[in-house]
Image (cartoon, rainbow, N blue to C red; front, top):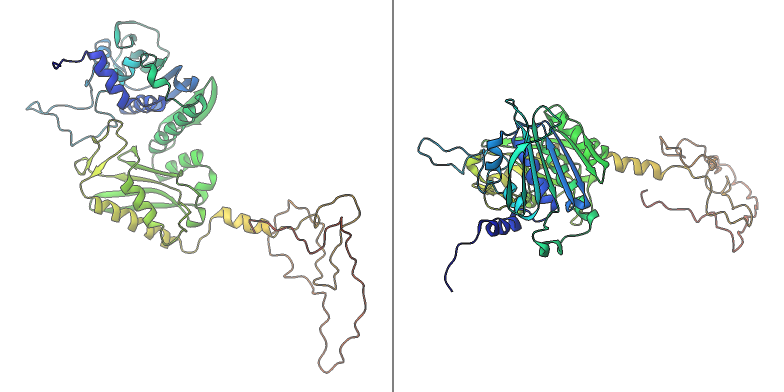
Length: 439
């Protein structure tokens, strides 16, 4: 069989299988393009789990009409510049995207509309691509002064086999929301918004750059508990900086879903980094518990290779031992500095475990439940305290004991026969105290 050149449309569809695995992958590529274009506000709208419609709008630099046609060509990008000799250095990647595959890949398997207005001035123009067929750009309406709007409809309509591997619309929408949260963690100075089926799901206003703004952004995404139980991490070794926030050991989780790792602002899933994170907490957590952490590595682009995966989700470090040692040593130093500080969630659960209850045992209407006698064990008489009242001190420590202590050289007191009431079979015993799992 002779060797043939594949048509460009087929080449783009093959590439789309690597770059655009699911709707969340398309959103990731489009959001990264917006961030590289200097956007300060990014809005995402999805319908049908992203398979029916995806809209990503930003207020970035925008593109002129002649740039629109280049944007949908394969391996055409504005993020790599040749040197005087015409060579392009792939070792100095300072942007999130650089391969020039996202837009042509999406346009080859969906109906793509690209609308943009340049920041330098001029009218807005739109270009359409349907299954790889390009319609020349023409004038179009645009709501903002500058920026870009990318609308994707009927994703994978040109590759029906791929649709069979998609999950439910709800699962795809959740994956998109998770991807947007990851991007928002690394760019706290950018406003993010997500609408699903016309309903507002995510609203993250811009925060001031820095540790305080980053922690507020993380609290808005991971919850206020993470903010109250996070330790600041900031260590540098051999021009490699580790920053972010790590949860206290007592604020651990049953799975590793609350572990977010970034390299030069890019969310990654790297086994080296995940293993170093587990190793740092090895002396503080049980084997079935996982820490919560959001860590950022800032590395010289010459010392890290981000061109090892089409989706850019994996990286390779030139000095992997240095990076691992920095993560393990830096986290252990931060945890040791925290001392015996316990998480606020554990303290709250411990206090609520001592909260007085309204009664002992269930009420079944067959009569009053037996109550402990003051002379039986203590003189504490706060059994009727509201169950919602939070105890400030351990109850019973300052109460007078109901026991009678004999005086020195005095005869023992004559015991008084006080019959104790016996609960009926349908009643609960006074000693059947309700135990709390959190106590």
